[in-house]
Length: 587
Image (cartoon, rainbow, N blue to C red; front, top):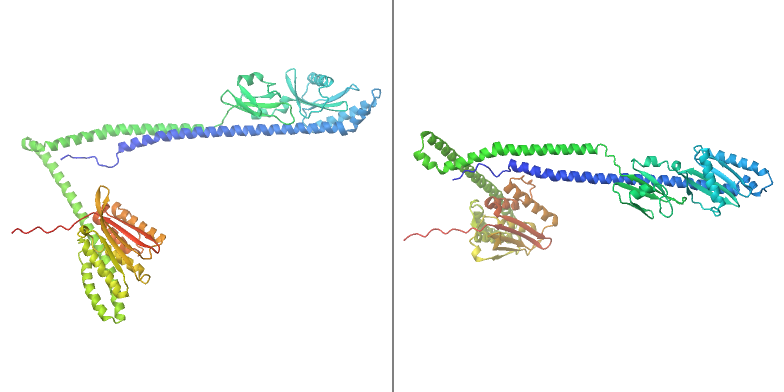
């Protein structure tokens, strides 16, 4: 005999190992989730910056369009411009018109961006004036005037172009627009750093910058930085060889140049980094705790227990020798172990016998529930025939009923041969035919070598009774087929019995309810689950299923199939048992 102290319950050591195995993928999943969230947040920040960049450029473009409209309207409709156009070189009145026009421009300048400078030039009269922006220096402003005047004289602006040009004057960028009408030129310019000052808010890193790109795709500003980062322009699309940078390119409709914005990817994680670090620290603490518990459990619990178990098993193997040759103290220890072993064996026997008594009581209770069920139906049949004064039929009915009642009153714990169950099913159908003048018939499809198989009494009979009960007054030619065969189930064979009828069948809802009831009963009997609620329906079916589960355990099964207006089939499978013949008498 070998004593096994460790039970089959979950081991604490295995649970801790499982916890560690689960913590690792959880941490990996957490890190991946954080990285995914970081990437999505970076994309959201990049999209937000791109949206702000596009919006600000739209505002700049709208401002340039507004200035274009003012310049065009002034050249075409202003009366002072018209006076200058009609003046001759020898007239001096156009100076007064020029002063008035300059006053109008200065007045307008107070309502728009003060950074704009307006310049009016008529080569025919050698007349020019300017209204400078507040931020322009005198010498710088004149350098822009000289550059614009030189281009006008060279014929660059003989045709109007609504797109603003980029000028680089002594390393300072300007956005310039020049429009002409009948030899008169009206120009406007503003420093690029002023009109594009919004980049100070959009670009968030020190490495960020913007560049003005010409129509050929070559950067006009910050050319070295663009080449250093390997930025390539293809239409409105940009690519950057350097990782960690976002590039955005916009070419407004009223500008002859495009604007490229470059910024390093910056993401303000806020408290996310702190929480990630906190979760990682907690993970390390839990991991260290689990590893310590595993070490402690093995060192101070599992190893001493295995040592004790090994010595006890060794002692049990050598017990007969120690009892014969050992000292008195060893005999006392041996006697104590023997007494403990005997008590455990007696306890197992008591528990087993108690389980048998409880099962027998429950079976008798279920059988006693079935018997009144049949008695009530029998009394109803007698009452109906007595009302019709059918005394001959009553006598015939009583003879059949007497044998039938004897069968019902037989011991519920003892099984009966299948042949006897079939005979009493036929008696039951005869009783029903006598009562209702019906022609209910039963067809047997049973192998002869199956007739001596033992089954719990009143099982198949219950199914037949339910068939007659649910089809009376609905079918006069009810046919019941009872079959039994030896079927292969798993590694062995079982007795499979079927009760099929041609009745009205069950609805889909009723069939689903019956199967759910069988599932709950099986779980309650075999797994100790909750008993299904007693609704007063399917009493016979439920009692039969409980009986076979208590008798055969997991080796028993019950199934129902049905189709409306076609019929119902009940299939019951139980282990094969045969009646043992009495031993032959010796002569």
